[in-house]
Image (tube, rainbow, N blue to C red; front, side, top):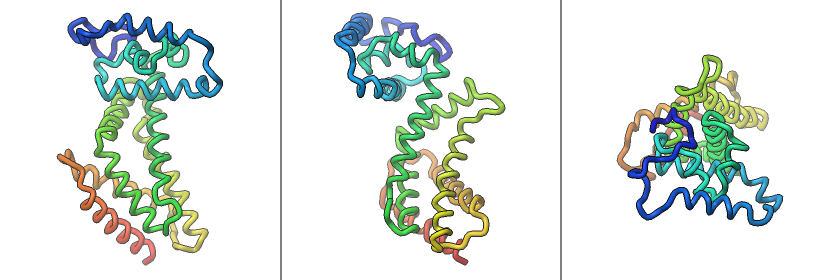
Length: 234
């Protein structure tokens, strides 16, 4: 099966685990889902639960074996419940990408909160490098490329949109530093762009590293942050 085939197509028998009956598991999940009505909290969290299950399936089985059957089993819900919220592959993967991007941004923005500006940016720089070269980060890159290749349009580019959103948040922090008279920046947008491009460039320079080296990354992040802000102050 290719990634362009429908999600509801089941995997060949030889690809499935011999000790697990896929159909039985799906039916059991559907029956379990009908036992009593979910609480309001459970209902509100259901889309997130489905997307988390989708990410687990994608990470474990790749795009080739990404099916709603597998997602339903991971989420322990009926497949129809997924279709009601995400009627097709494009809708599901676009929602999954946004979900993971928002999740990642919130985790990064929480790092270094309350610290002096240089220290805050330093810690976030190290975190960004670690995240981007992690297995989750590599999978995110594949998901972005897949979305752009499969259903991105000329006017919609997911990677560009991700970078633009990152720039917005970097600019907000730099503008606040100007308001607080920590820095004098004549072109905040350009300064934010240089910061982001430096981070992305460093990750690309590392290439496919065998293992994340925290000490080296933190040392680079400190040097990069101090150099960057020294240039701004000059």
